[in-house]
Length: 218
Image 1: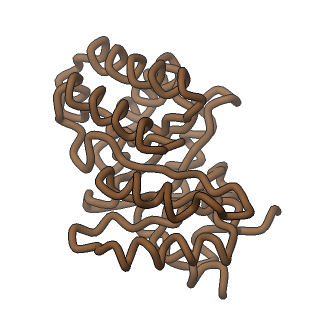
Image 2 (image 1 turned 60 degrees about the vertical axis):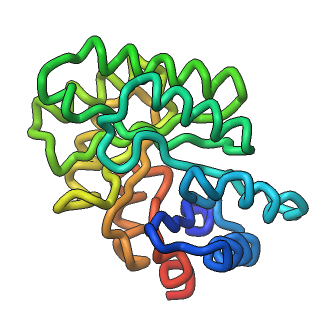
């Protein structure tokens, strides 16, 4: 297995995070050579400045339509465009779960396709948060299928705001459903090295966590 650091999106999305906290996040990512940092949209430009001279490539991820996904498409498109202009290289987009539960599958797919096209035009990637805690087996299959059709680069388990986060068995199911080119990001409640390894062995290629230091230091 590659070093765990290479799997980790070092994440800080708390409402009270300060610039000092974001600077510390970037310093930790630099030291431990994490794959990415994931910050709120308001901190993308600042994070870009912090990592400008980093000798290793650290992706700058941010969230779109976070955490509930029910922003309008126009709002999400603006968020995505603005984030890319500010230096984001990865967009973690919350699927419109409300529309999805209303079986408005075409609308959900069209929205994700539009954002994916915007991201890919800037050589950025899109990770779609499907919030697996709210999905039964049929929903999970359908959501993964929609993400693949929309040309998502990753399907992500959770925002961290639902009652349950990443689950090993769900990640295994996702891997069995998704085509090989669509990767999985496990996120939500991953706090230990053992949990991270279990998710990777189940098929995840990214780990979203605010416990990256504890994981790689264990």
